[in-house]
Image 1 (cartoon, one colour):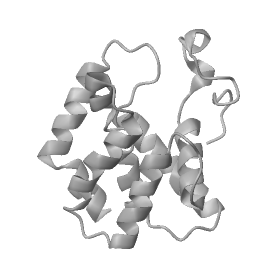
Image 2 (cartoon, helix red, strand yellow):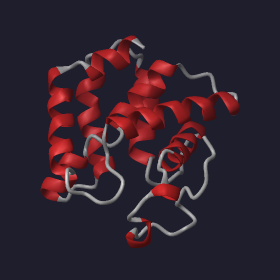
Image 3 (cartoon, one colour):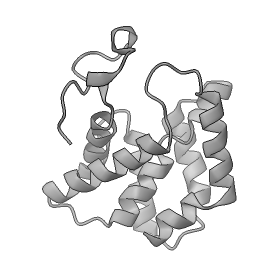
Image 4 (cartoon, rainbow, N blue to C red):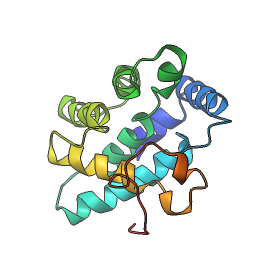
Length: 157
């Protein structure tokens, strides 16, 4: 988990995380915070294992830490957060020793995490993002604009 820790403990990453927590402090729907990022990492790791993908936990958790960090830009200027996260992630990935191929896998998962299309890992990452949400206990579930088909209405992972 060397690269995951490089990203997480980076001062600039911590500033993004603090700003995101501040910007979403009154959000009644699912928050995009460290708890969410870690849940996505855990679930994506399980799904990748179940699907027989040979990807390191370091790669998966790094993608999880970065996939929603662009929410800051989405809130500030309307840039779709998957696109903003993709651009922001490039700078953090430059500080790691991931290979070019591994960086492309991470960036693709980030860019496609709202669509569920692309590589096998992109699809798994999309599913993990949805499964990380405890819609079955959410007090704002009736106000949520997600269709029931996207909501995680029972415990699966």
